Length: 124
Image: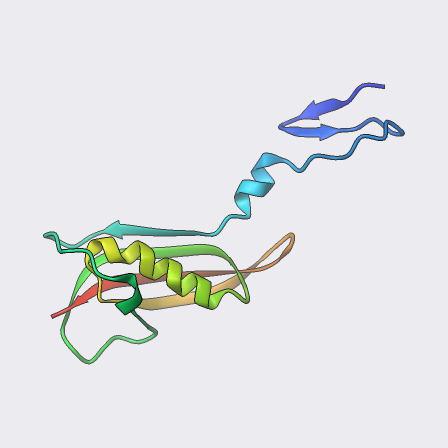
């Protein structure tokens, strides 16, 4: 018998001995991402990602907002990996810290995933 293809998924005919291929959309949907959008005026020299603070509350010192940060798709046990990705994506803006304003978890077919939103800032 022949295989039927539906939206990138190869469905083997019963008894064909062929394996089922995972749809490309499912694989791509499982990727983690960090998006940083510049919202501030001006341009600043990039910073070293290793020096960027990850904050959960607004700092007591003065700062300037440089951009928004949106994170999605990290595994529930990958908070350090997520924070390092945030640092790497915020460094080109010249950020010295990122304030995570909201965080949470959502269920995916293969487990729980993390999401977060925040603001990349430059201490004054």
